Image (cartoon, rainbow over all chains, first blue to last red):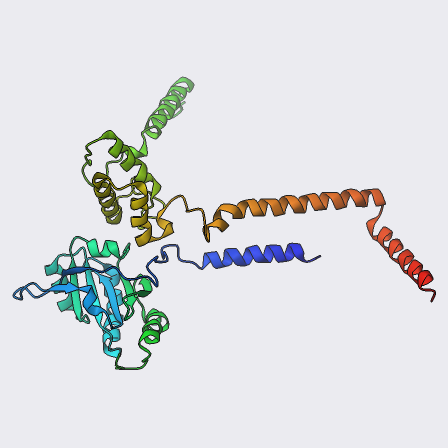
Length: 183
Length: 172
């Protein structure tokens, strides 16, 4: 009991220390382990291609990634090499949500930086983003075969975040780690 | 005398500067125009609800501003959603569920009472009770020790007397 005050002080210190290491801009998503919002929206297509709607329910049955990006988003450029690496390393559909962007700007941006996306959804009004609780760009959602959100990454993915957070989350769902593994 | 401000001028200047500062400070910060044109409502009750709700929710982009005070695009979107729902006749609970389902409890300035938030609501009172309890225990011990004289010696004497008593009682 003599050391009780010391223990109390250490306890409070540990509590505050943990608090310091939290990034206040990262807010836990209430969507984790809940069904992802169902939506349908237009795909981003080339100028001469006809409009093509995208229905999120067509993704049911496969693990997929939804990456929120925009041509006006600086950190997206920083993140982009990781998305290109992801597309090369995993056979998991990567869907881009082009958030509050002009299709022409988005196309030019992809032409310049490379296009790792299987599909890009054009969310000019930001309605799909609103349903996903997007509050910053970029954000990345991992959605499982049952259509539930299993992981959300806020902010740009660097190589470390990709290796230590995103890939393990995806591999745990597909059960198939390693390069080029089939889902 | 060059460069010296006569005392009376100095006083009157100070007074007018303070007056100016007060006048500026009294301009309410809500007066800063919102990013979008003024929104219209059919009834004053709707407008009042809108104004009240905008102060109850946080802009997640600039976390220390409410939806009313934030110029972030996200806050604009959420203001629009809230306005649409008010006009559609949704009650506060529906609007609350809409926001919390997307952005979590953090979007509310006043946390929900229940679940993990109980730590937030009741934690300070628990800590206060522990503090008061510890203070009371220490005060009581202090008083007892003051009565018993030197605490260490008193306890030592007590211990040996007890030991002696036990020895005698056991008959060893």
